Amino acid sequence: MNVIYIDSSPLCRIGVKELLGGVLFFHKPSESILERIKEDPDLIIMDFPREIYSFEDYLRFINLLRYKYLSVKLLFFIDRTSPLISSLISEANPDAILNKSSSLKVIKETCISLIDQGHPANSCGLKKSKTAHITRGEIAVLCETARTWDVGITARRLNLNPKTVYSHLNNVGKKFGIRNRLELFKMMVLL
Image 1 (cartoon, rainbow, N blue to C red):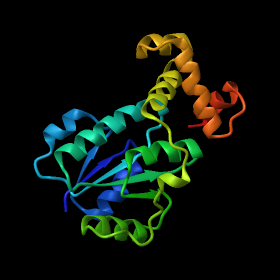
Image 2: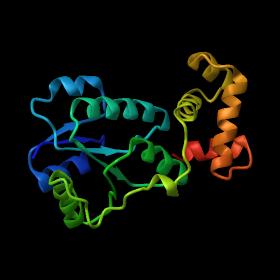
Image 3: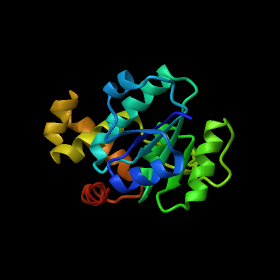
């Protein structure tokens, strides 16, 4: 069983190592990880990033990984959730999602089931139909705006018109029932 675990929490690393045995650990996703992998991974376990703006890097890594390793399974560990987090994670199309507080038995059974190509019985998966769909452009604008907190800078960095940035932010707000941009920024801060 070849498992890669991407998470910055040392406590979670120790728990996964005890639970699954030989696991490769990395702090955050990067293309250099793909160069260090000797054998095709069966399972990638990832934590949702602490900073929303780094989620684009996660998606880019996941896409590269799935292109290189067609049969790899993806499990997201989360310790908090919101409609926005659920929607972002659904864009990654994970095979399973588990809360970090799940029992060790459920975590182990889910990992083994994913590796054996089955469907985990006790995992909490997200279905795209139950979450608001955020486009790639909206994700890019959200992530960059969370990084800069300035629409003008976001527009320049993404090579967009500021009105397009406002439009993407307004569309995300509508999808989550947020009444104004201040509420949207507050939700982004809570991530």
